[in-house]
Length: 316
Ligand code: GA4
Image: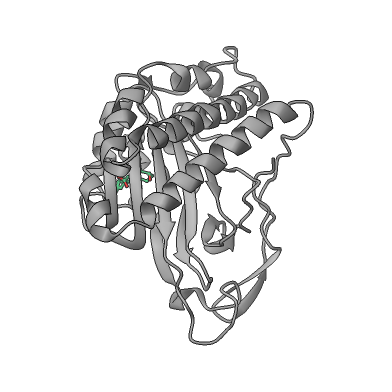
């Protein structure tokens, strides 16, 4: 499994820029059997998702409106953000999935709930493994400092299924070579509030990452890869050593829709977020005050998608 490798060149407007290569981690090797299970779980979830999005609008609407959970179309959050996307947002607790499945697949709810349950368990393992490697790399005394929050039964992790309609350009130019301003925005620029996001997609492009110099780097779609984002909470817990990445999704010139499945690994609501002790030194004092995940989530939903939420919690 590989974490996203972008094309080395992309265009913003008329300027051709040499772009940085996004970091790629190869997780293949001795654990091929586990990888196979994850692939199977992702394929099953993708099939169920596509089956749902192919249903008539009046049926899909029975699983909505998103409150924030459930089916949503174009509206994102509660403060006026919109995008060319339809989606299903799921709380990952088995009871909640079972309940939601009744409206998502009313003819065979168990088929949807077992696909979602299987995928959530698989992708949670991927998230925890990556978080453990991060903790080790940072020299954290508690090797499970991050992953234990995700494994907690009360973890507030969510799963998002996104379906982006294709945006057909008048001429057959490729989306990468097309001026970004003329593309439709599926999901506007934002950072993810949680700890870590693990995203898979089909082979349709659209995801872009914001890098230094105000440049958007297109992530080459790869159905065999996980795309991993550091979230705001991980930025706070590492006292800014890891930075929550700004990203967006565009509707590109494609013959079919883009499907992405994002697992947002989050701590329990009552968990207090503060930097790991090893991340704070006299020369690098705490950048953020302690806050609970519930407090952070509330702040997130009170702001617009593109707002910088972490700034509200800065110590100075
Ligand atoms: C962005 C990351 C996840 O998709 C999400 C989004 C949430 C939503 O769509 O309900 C938010 C958005 C996300 C950040 C700011 C708030 C909350 C919409 C919005 C305007 C599920 C999440 O946790 O935060």
